[in-house]
Length: 188
Image (cartoon, rainbow, N blue to C red; front, side, top):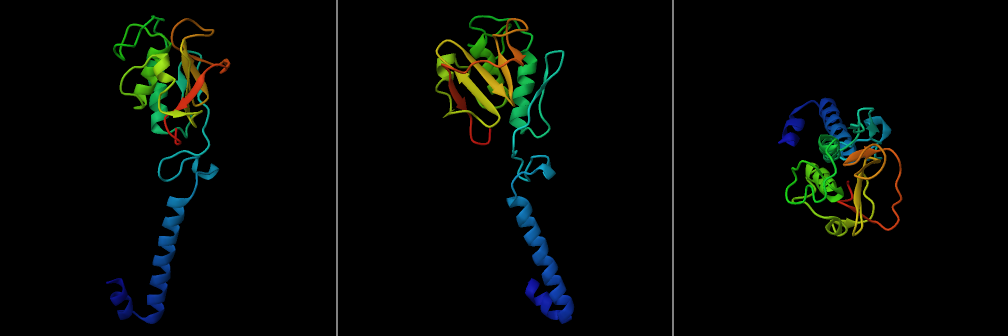
């Protein structure tokens, strides 16, 4: 159909229109195939993120996601923020995601549920076998048979450490020795 219309036009106009259409198609291809770059804020046209940004911890204990965080990462941080002041409760969050308090695996399960990465709570042994081996791009779960914590956009969510008992965002680093790293997928 386009070819018939081009044939009915003046040859110079037809060539110009054909070149403009080709340029637009090439530009559209480059935009959808281009990797994330600093010029796009680290986000590609398909919504995936390039180099992960770092979450920030506010004085009130809430975490703030980086501007280039994918939606699931933002949701994980929001979930952690909702329970960040809950007390430590052994077994908390195991029979239901909603509880008055949380232990380590209940807190990690709640964060993963918020990111739509987990359908039911798991204990730390179950989190040792969750999804894929290794560290994630944005979200990494570290688990052994006795404890688990999650790192989201470079910030640790854990029930142990300074700043109170119970689930909290923690600035200080923690040794990962003896823990198995797990992640949801290559994108996260």
